[in-house]
Length: 80
Image (cartoon, rainbow, N blue to C red; front, side):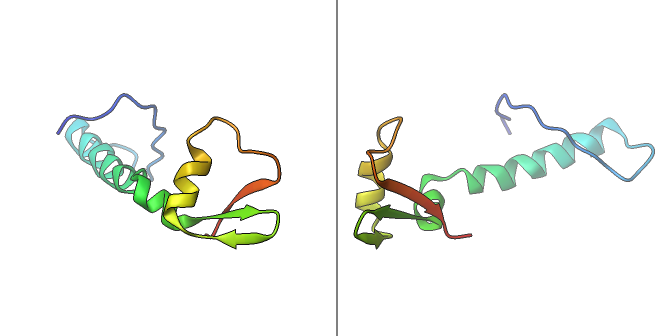
C-alpha cells in the first residue's frame, strides 16, 4: 500500500516494538485517516449557517467551501 507523505507521532505503550509491527500500526492509522478524509464524510459532519437558516444540504456546503474564506455571516459548524 502506498502511504501518503504525512507526519504522524505514534505513542505506544510497549517498550520494544519491531519495525514490522510499527509499520503495521502506521498502515492501520493511514487506513483510518483515509476514510475520515473523504469529502462525503466532511459534508455529512458539517452544517452551513447563513444569517437566517441552517442547512446540511451537500450542494450548498460544497458551494460555500469552494473558496478559501467563507462569505460574511456564513459559518461551518461541525455536528460532532
